[in-house]
Amino acid sequence: MAMVVKNNMSAVKTLNVLNANSAALAKDLQQVATGMKVNSAADDNSGYAISERMQVRIRALEQADQNTQNGANMLKVAEGAVSSTVDILKTMKEKAINAANDSNTDADRATIQKELDQSIDQIDDNALITYNSKTLVDGSRMAKGVATKTSLTNQSLSEDTKGSTKIIDLKNRNGEGLNIQTTDTLTVSYVIQGRTYSTDISVDNELDFDKVLDRASAIFTESSPAMASAVATRDGKIALAANTRDNKISVAWNDYLDSTELARTNYQETIDNGLSPTGYDTRTRTGITLKEAIAEAEADVENYTNLLGRAQGYLDGATNPDDVQLFQDMVTMYNGRLSTARTQLADFNTALQEARDHATPIRDGAIQDALDEYTQKETEAKAEYEQAKNTAIQEYQDTLGDIFPYDLSIETSNVVGKDAAGDTVYTANGENAITIKSMTAGLKYQISGLTFSVSDSKGQIKKSVNSVLDNFNESVRAFNKSNDNAINLQIDAKANQTIRISLTDMRSEALGLKSSDGVTLSVATQKHANAAVNVLDNAIQKALDQQTDIGAVANRMEQTSNNLHIARDNVQASESTIRDADMAKAMTSYTKNNILLQAAQSMLAQANQSSSNVLSLLQ
Image 1: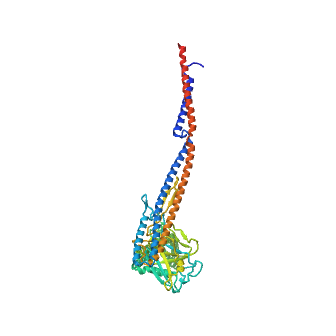
Image 2: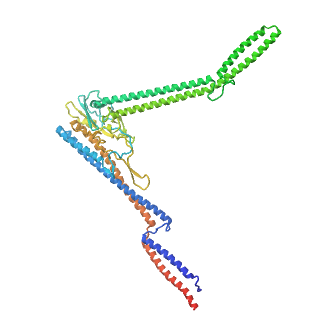
Image 3: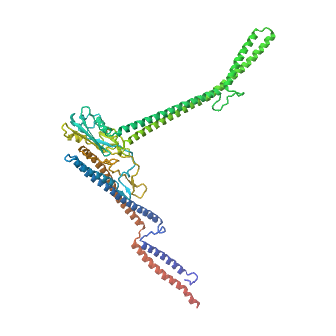
């Protein structure tokens, strides 16, 4: 090998190897230090991008899992409040049953009433339970819904039971008669806004369900002096609305007549003036109107006809040649003038007909426009009337305050009503059943409980009869109209992957135990206590329904959390495969590259030593 000093290629090549070994060793050191074989996009561009996306997914799943656990904790708070309410209602039913026992005095019932009042107050406290400053079961977390009416359905009575069915003809589901006699007494009790209404009705051959409800509804009128005033107020407002409607329709009619008359007048003026509404100039050259020109032309025709007749008469009687020539010239002249006058008259009549042809559709259009305008005004007036009437009725109902509407309806169908979502609700088995509904939707008018009790002439309760007749259960719960305030829990890493939770109203008013003005469920008398038992049964069912809904969602949250754990672990395993370093392999590579680096360093020293040997030749 030649001995050179300018380009020591052995040293250069050894240096390149040294640098490569150094770079490989640095890479091994980074893998060992970080535990990852892909530390940047330079290491593996596609693998790095995939790994980063997986890390985003992992972090999103971890946050979704945290959301799920927070949601589950929130539901536990709500469930605890509802569970406490259920326990309170159980105790209240015990107390109501106790109060219904005539071994208690009125003073005893007053004591029980105090305990019930405190329990009702505690139910309201439970409804105000909060989580992270959010009140949960006070009705503020309900989904969007319309106001609903209370529906109470009895599926123990025969399927063909109707409002017109006589009480003495009532049958059970198997078609067996209930054996209600004309000597029996039917007691109807119900609770509205915490107030208990009760009436005794003597059974006769003509008494049917409709009459029973009419008499039961009459309790409101009898018990409320404000009812007559409210009815008068309503009737006055409806009468005022009717007057407003009639006045508006009258105004619209007069406007129609005026518009139509104006159209006719404009049309007639068009004809009279000889002017086409399209702008066609039908005036004569002298500036007079067609009407005037026609009148002049008609006068000329008549005048020249008369003059021609005279001239012809003179001609016929003339004998002198000079006279014959004179009268002949006059006949010729008047014939020409008459022809010209007739031509002008025909031209003017043609122009007038053209004006009429132009004016007629304009007139007809104007009349049709006036008719359309009237029709529209009449429709608007009727719509305004209907709105005013409905507003008057609503205002009337609002004036009733906590007085229940003066009517109860009864229907026989497999349809029991509509829920807050507007969906039709059917009987559980799809068979026909008799359903009693409140007249108006909303909590203010809900029937908290309805009790029928039949007793014989000796006052003994007919238990077998009542087990069928008194089996009215709440099939549609009354709600006020609500906005969409349901809770949405983000439970996955993608948009719109949520669990929607609607929590109903667990306040005492919504459960039918208390009125908006503070009147509470009464057990002051045996009848009141007996009616309260059914009210509490309905309240317990409402609370249990809510507790069931919460429990179902809570169970789903637990399953969702487990699913998120599995998804996160699987994604993390995939990300580990792409990015995590095999430490044994990395250390082996590190040891190899470390040895090679040291060897390269030694060889570089040897290569550099060969250049120094040139000095021995220069000595």
